[in-house]
Image (cartoon, rainbow, N blue to C red; front, top):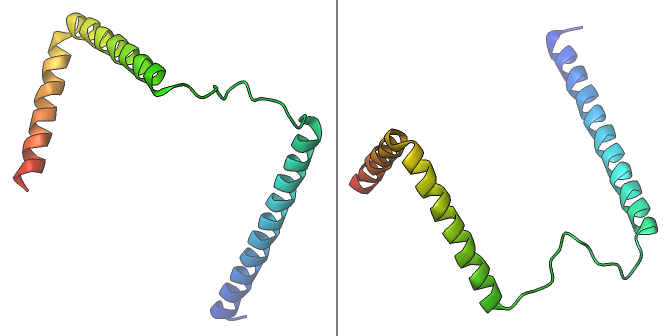
Length: 101
């Protein structure tokens, strides 16, 4: 068997294997979705999905998150000022290089 024929045979075997894996994946996915639909009640709510909130409530939550983040950053900077200065220097250098282009 020549080298080309060997290579063609290997490619054909790989294609067949990929096709079998794809069909197996499709079967597993279909089976999993069927099992999930059998076990799930039709009108159940998902606990990980929060109900919709008004934009005002979302804005308040965002403000609180930003406040917590700024407090955390202040604490980290107070504990490690050298790292904060180094990070600021690197960020400044990055912005300088990007703006020079």
